[in-house]
Length: 130
Image (tube, rainbow, N blue to C red; front, side, top):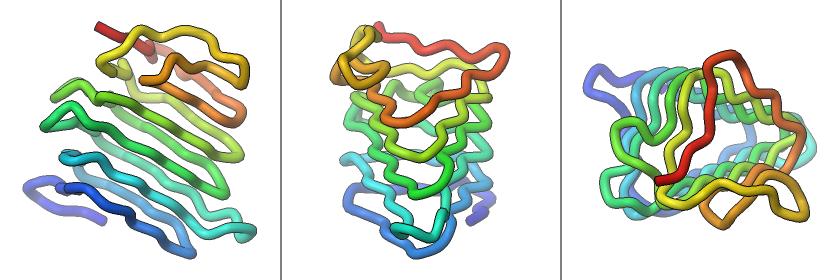
């Protein structure tokens, strides 16, 4: 999906059986839940920034890979980021949420950032709370 003025996702769930590919900047409001099909390996990719206008957050559930190619929360910190995928690639700069990042029992988690699946962190990527 590409939009000259950016992509606005305001609440609710977007569920697909195939890939979700966001090529423009994404602005969130009222939380968003993005899910791809089960068993067929589709993924979710953000090629540009992801920001939050009201401090809620984003849940990503991908049967395949979840890919973040640019900063998350730079234009508005996410209240939370929860990512579950067979592979998670953080390759685009800082990830800003409104909580403090720590290590949970099932991966990197503190209630505001949770990663369920193998995580690859690219150069220049950092996870940050307030």
